[in-house]
Image (cartoon, rainbow, N blue to C red; front, side, top):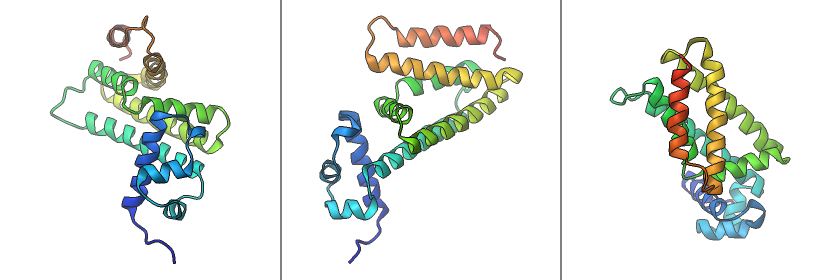
Length: 190
């Protein structure tokens, strides 16, 4: 008899996989590890997912959707200062100091090293983030430069994340973010 569908169990599985991905490499995680971490049987796990790759894909989708929603909520809050300098600073800080930064780097590595489904999802999401960010930049006066500035912000954000995740002692992330925001605003990204 098939296990009853329960979105809560699926979320438990994805939460457990996300926790494990912060602790060790995907290749070192077994389905038994995920089942144990999520508190479900392997049979229940297989009811929802046929493979680790399917779990990774859903973890990536959930994570990327969360990032997009966070930005939309932040920019849509009329009680916040979402001016161009604040938008740039927020985007850099959110992207660079995200609790799931190691997971994002893992997903980028997986996509870059041959996991085609993850690569396609990341390319699709980067394009979505770029369009969304360009729109928010245009709303704040970035004009013709909005498309370029959005790609620049995403690219720099990933670089800051890499240096932060490496724990590079020579890299002052908050200082770098502050100076980058100042320079972008000086250079009239607007």
